[in-house]
Length: 309
Ligand SMILES: Cc1ncc(C[n+]2csc(CCOP(=O)(O)OP(=O)(O)O)c2C)c(N)n1
Image 1: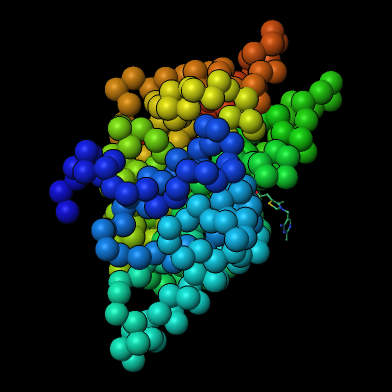
Image 2: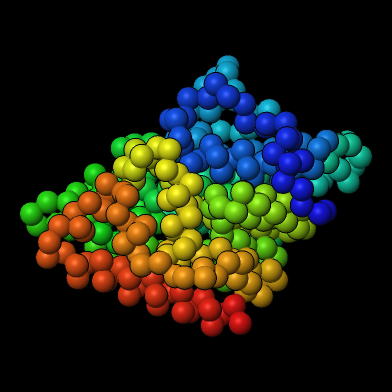
C-alpha cells in the first residue's frame, strides 16, 4: 500500500490514553506507531512480556488496549504469541474464525534480549506468522533501571552505578537485530522515531503483513532511565541515527538494506551529552571512555555498510 502520513496519523488509536505509563515514555510511542501498521478492520492479538508496558497498560479490569491482550510472564511472550497464532490457523482451517487476526508480541529489552530470548528464538525459528516487537529502552526500567544486555557501555544504571571504582557498565551491548537476522526469517528491521514516523509506520506494516516471522527492534528512549529532558525525545532519536549508534535497516529474506545514511555522521558525544546516564563521561580526563564508545560505533557501522552492499 502507498504510504500516506496524514491517513496513517489519523487512524484510530489502538492504545488509548489513560494508561499509567510515564509522560514522555518511548514504549507507548512505539506501541501506538507499530499498531498504525494494522489495516482497518483487522484485529490484533497482543502478547506482552512483563515490563513497564505490561504492568501499566492493563490493570484488571481496566485496559488501555483496544485489541485482545494476553499478559505473559517475563520470559514467554514469544511462546504465547506463537501458540495463539497456531490455534488461530487451526480454527481458521475448520472455518470457526472469520475475521483476520494478526499476532504481535511486545517486550522490553530485558524481556527480549535476555530472559525471553529462548522463547523468542524458538518462535522465530518455527517461522510463525507473527511480529515480535522489542521496545528497547536499554535497561530493566520497571524494576528501577538495572542493566540489560542492551545497555550501552559506560551507562550509569542501578546495577552498574558510577562511582570512584566504576565508570558504569563495562560490557558492550548485544546486537539483537543481527542475532535475529541469523534466524533467516522473512523480515527483520531496526527503527525509531524519526522521519515524521514514516520509518516505523512503513516497517510495522511490512512486519505485520509479511507472511511468517518478523522482528522489529525499536529504540524507545526512557526519560527516567536515560535522564534527558522529556520533550527532547525526538532529538535524542535523531541523534541516535545521525551518530550511527542506532542505524535504520531492514533484512528482507536475508538481504540487508540500509534505510538511512547520515549526510554527516555526527560524533557519538552528541548522542551521549544530553543524557544524565553518561554525565560522568564528560568530566576532564574521561575522553578515552568516549573514544572507546566511538570506536565500537564505527566498527559496527562499517560492518553494516559492508553487509548492506
Ligand atoms: C522471572 C521474573 N523475574 C523478574 C521479574 C521482575 N520484573 C518485572 S518487570 C522487570 C523489568 C523489565 O525490563 P524490560 O523487559 O527491559 O522492560 P521495561 O521495564 O524496561 O519496560 C523485572 C525484572 C519478573 N516479573 N519475572
